[in-house]
Image (tube, rainbow, N blue to C red):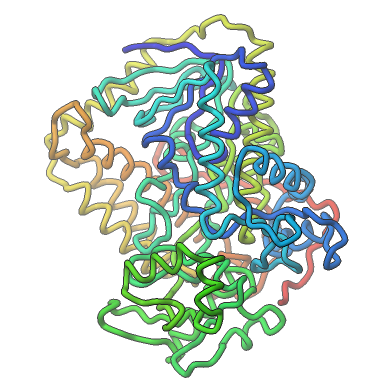
Length: 581
């Protein structure tokens, strides 16, 4: 196995990973050797799919806005499960990061006075979301990528599929990755490592996320014995286009779009009268499910059997759609032949974002337990649960989180690497060989199970039983079904046995990761007996702060079961209160 030595290795090439690479390079004046691994071409990272914008108080005082109000909105939106010290970091650094990306070349929408325009987003008291039409993530990632190419010390390894995180007690040692072009396994060692692989919403079938959003870094951390946090909290975006699940950005409602049921009523008046279509996503998603369950949904066989509602943008006019939502217009016309300037769009909730992930402290350091961090391993972006989103993320806070903790972890990793010096890590060759052997066992298996059939069954199970509303019975069925799929996965057969760009092998590795995360998610959801944010239990309809104002901590056990513990929630300024909109 080839072993490559670097000063910093970054797993993941989305906004968090690229921002970390940029910061580490700047912090070291371009002297540290940085390897950034992506299982895709780096510019195909899922960050490009972020549409609506990024939050930050650019103009304090206008409309009564302030950092404190941004923090309150975030804590309330999170149903008070967020760590408020982390929220304070987000609200403080978001404006300066938006301005940095202005200098990097992001074409923010601007008003006649030249200032960056802010749009309204769900759960926010006032408009505070900067945007670049409805392609914000694409423009931000493009700006980062173009700037990273100027640094000779950063080497990007496109199409390297991570297969293992190797640790020794409290210290990261190496990453192993499959070179898709050759089928060979390469080990990357470094004094510092940052995991930035995004979320795992693809454990569901109906989702807004890419096929690549399989939570690889989270699954590998779990496999390495590291704890995960708040995995039961999966966000469902209320407006996914039917039948594909393609995201229709919250900005469509921020620009004034209406949600209507089969009777043509703006039904959000019954659920969040003060916010209407700009209520937080968990509330709107459950409202849509309720409308359908109570017979006020819309049904059309050409879109399948599931009921839906309409997102009405017709009153906004073609000029505004062309200026503010051009991609949404293009998607609707190309995918289902509907011009949103003339007809409403069929939408329903889809899995979208995962609030849970690798357990980290406020600095993004991966935790070994409730108190002790790893000495040289960080997680940033959606894969790292810092926790700034708690039980429910507010739209446009995700991009802020990605780049802020990208910066924080990039700085910390650079400092640690400089202090550690450039001495190559002492790696136990057997640990690396074990990772390579596990890939070959999967490739060479003569089992009888089709991995794609297992994936389809996982998707059906998660969609049916672990949705916006949950019950003990449904979650038990899901956990048992996923447990059976995990067992069947040990007997899979890979159709392609070649080594060069074996996408069957890559898919099977991802399916294995998703099965583990689906199992952890269902176990944690069954354990939490309350309704909080995106986790709504029909048997426990109220939030229970006395018992459940705490983070769920999940770790792997030798038996394959999930060991569940807890960690305190940090409350600083915003005391938990009843969540009304």
